[in-house]
Image (cartoon, rainbow over all chains, first blue to last red; front, side, top):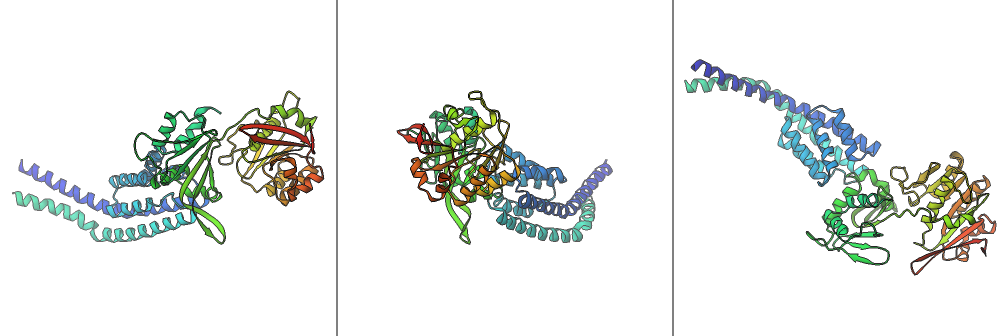
Amino acid sequence: MMLVGALIVLAAATFIGFEASRSLRERPRELRQLQTALQALEAEIMFGTTPLQEASDKLAGQLNSPVSLLFSEFSRRLEEQGETTAEAWQRSADGVQAAGALTREDTSILVEFGQTLGRFGRSEQQKQIRLALTRLSQAEASAREMCSRYERMAKSLGFLGGLLVIIALV
Amino acid sequence: MQTAQMWEPVKHVLPARFAKAVEEENLTRGFEEIRLRVGRAVEVSTGRASCFLSPEAGDACFTAQDAAETLERLSRHSVYAYEDEIRQGFITLPGGHRVGLCGRTSVTGGRVETIRNVSSFNIRAAKDLVGISRPLHAYLFDDAWLNTLIIGPPASGKTSLLRDLARSASVGMNQPYALPHKVGIVDERSEIAASVHGVPSFQFGERVDVLDRCPKAEGMMMMIRSMSPEVLVVDEIGSEADAKAVTEALQAGIRVFSSAHGASLQDARNRLMLESLFSRGAFERYVVLSNTRGKRQAVVQTSGVTS
């Protein structure tokens, strides 16, 4: 009986460790995707002058989850109306954070960018996108470093933590 | 145009509490202008009178926040997509309503770059008066459409008449009998066709091509070169280049419907740039519109002789 309990604790702790390491790996990937997405948005704005809702629809179709969620949700919210652009963007960004590996700092870059979205002419809008891109790529670099430093550690820490709990309880 | 079709696009743009007030006051059909000014009550004018709205709930004034949100809705959350429109000072809504904008302009190199902090909106209802040109058809068509200049003061219905004439030419008529013609409209200020994304909001029949927001003189030449119109419609001619382009069109055998500001025929004639057209007898018919005590009247003249 005790053995079964110990095994469950160990499995759970290992799982938590693997999850943590997975999200460490996922975060730079998602940040990279966000940059690709914003670059595509920039192209839509600069060359197509496509209104945001249509541009978002297009992007949602081109991207992978969870970043695609940002745009599909944003487009849906704009269509529904009743929210300002910044609100709709912020709620969509929160949704992505919940669904993926992004941290609060990452979403705050997005939210800040959202305050400017759709409020300026093309050239100014482009500057805002560039600014957001720079900040996202900085975040990506730090996320990569975190990943290389802690990814394997998170895995073993999970397993070892499980062992520690078992020993402490026994 | 259906009332719902007319009101819906405006309702969508207005802050909700003011839209509700307009509906409660039963003004959705009758309004001519709705004026939104930051820090002031919202004014609705019906042509005969104007009143200020007092919404049931919320701020009675139009706030700066309202203005920002109204611009967002107007530009479909994408100001960058409406840069040209904002620079020219108006955005055309579906259904042909025009929203004039005022605020702090930002100027680069002596040119208005954009309007920031838009503080006043003027929503002007588009009224599509189908059939107003009918009483004039007998005078303006004689085996072929005659080159016509419509003269009138502002708000006397020049553009509405021009629009209806363009429609009559494109659709064709029974009385007098006229086949549908190919009609080209050069719509510099988007007033004749009220195009949204290049597609006219008004019904013109099958045979109309619209060159939207194109400078008149250049647009007329483009039309002549590439679209082979039989009738060319252009609003508010006045410059030398316009006169030249009209002459060019006439030489190509194209019929021209146009309009010019002026209280009378003589008034329009006095304008230097138009004089050359007058003296050459470019136009065969002049329609002089007057707007006295809200009554609109049209008088047709053939080069000075009333008929």
